[in-house]
Amino acid sequence: MTRKLLVLLVLVSVTIAGCSGGQSPATPTAEQTDDPPDEVPGVSNGTLTNATALTTANGAGIVADGAEIRIRQTAPDSEAQSHLTVAADGTSEFSRTVSADGNESGVAYYTNGTGTYVRADRDGETNYRVVERSVRPLDGVNSSLEAVLAAGNFTVATESTDSATVVLTADEFTTSPDSDVLEGATPQDARLVLTRDGAVRNLTVTGQRDGQTVTYTYERNRAAVDTVPAPDWLADVPRTADLQADLSATVVNDSVLRIEHGGGDTVPANTTLQFTANNTAGTVTFDAPLEAGDTRYAYFAAGNESLVLADDRPAADATTSVDSPASVTISTTDGVTLLSVGMGWGSESASGGSTGEAGGSDA
Image (tube, rainbow, N blue to C red):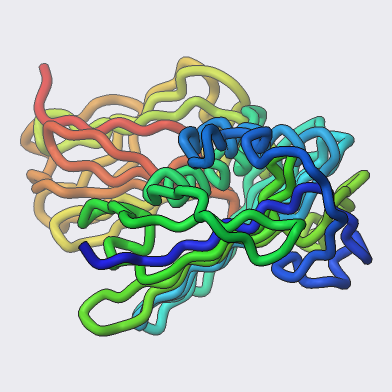
């Protein structure tokens, strides 16, 4: 078996100069201690046996004291960067940018205890939403970290680099071809730095895929954060961004799009409906508000195939058949997407905005 060295530097008692990030977390200073390395969460009998325990301890410290986390994943044809700041007062900000094949998309969240503000950038367009449900990007960050830690078989070596560190090596680093860890690449080396109480300061893994380098880096830059101020883009959030409307869209009898308002805020008049099917995109506006309990029907008219929006379900001979797949977007006049759903008959999928449905025929 090829031995792949993975170094785990356990800082038994840490004093980091410049907790605001002035010193690199990969080169911390430490004081000597006689405490055994087994006291590190997840490390038992000289082995990292429980990646979940280590990740949980790291996450608990972030929630309690606040921290700034950066994750960077690179490949020859793509790059993803995530930046999360969590404060002790419960405010948080998260952003993620993905670049691939010359295209870039991004999403950002800001939570201040009263709501979660969302900004999404894609294809040169920016959309905003304010959602009531809790958005917890830290859960995704913790999951990513745990997956990398669990992939390695870390064992304490007989030697140490100095009195403040413990070196772990791994004979195996197992990932499946579809794993998010290095996007299926074969890991070559890794380096992990953490404090004795389980705070991960830095983790870098480098791998190879088809002769190309792939990397994963997790970095904790600030030891404590009291509060996260509102980002500048919060001033650009439209007034309708906080509308909460339970909208659903279903294609019935392979010809008619049924839009239902299941509850929540009223959708204002002049809101735009875009229905794309049969390689054709049609756009209409609601001439009256759509209130909870209301239903509207959209269809491509037989003959000229123009998109029609009606209060009542049309007769079968007035519509044009719609082939799978199709997509629906409902947006307010100031650019807030209330519903965005792609559908294929017999399956369901939704992205952005409220929930959506996909359906084939019914009576």
